[in-house]
Image (tube, rainbow, N blue to C red; front, side):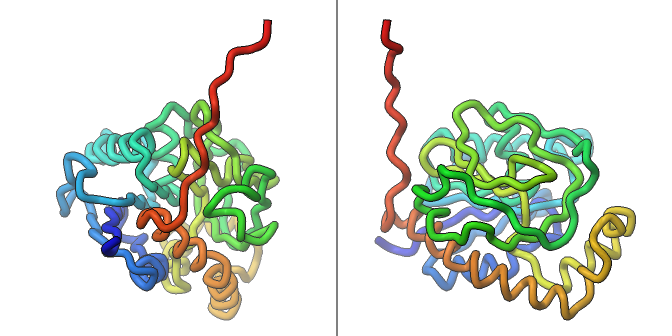
Length: 251
């Protein structure tokens, strides 16, 4: 198969595809990056073999300020329901959840900010993208909202003590991750400077250059192979999960 073409939606100029974009292209993908509202979003997903939605500073339903969010949610719902390999990152995961019947609300335990570990759930060990991740992969958090309720039928793949719904799969090949894997040291430090109140909730020293450099090396070691598997999924080189059979209860 030729290089899979991925639509990459970048909701916020402050959160580019970064290393994730490099990993996807290194794995053979062709990226069509759209930054709304400057870049028009396509009406549908025809011609794409995968969809990625990145993070941003807005809320998942803040349509009064960002009316184009409705189009993003529609595309994510189309990807999820149409069996297109789909990946939502932080805000992208929240948009995917809302678009398919879940709920996103302000986190009642405060912001989740800084480097953390998340823990794989049982279902992750048989998932084509998550199975090869370590038990507790490194991630980077910077969010105040949480996915309070997953969409009906979603499978929880990773969790954490503060907020449960850290990663999930919807259908056979739509994924949401409530954390960042695409950042750089400069990007995270810029976020901390722009949102000092949120940054102040993180552990002391986590935004130091040396600390963030090590964190991003750890993230790359874990998540670049994940990105490669996503491209392989979009290319048809690895198969999505088998559909769950629907059975009637015994009388």
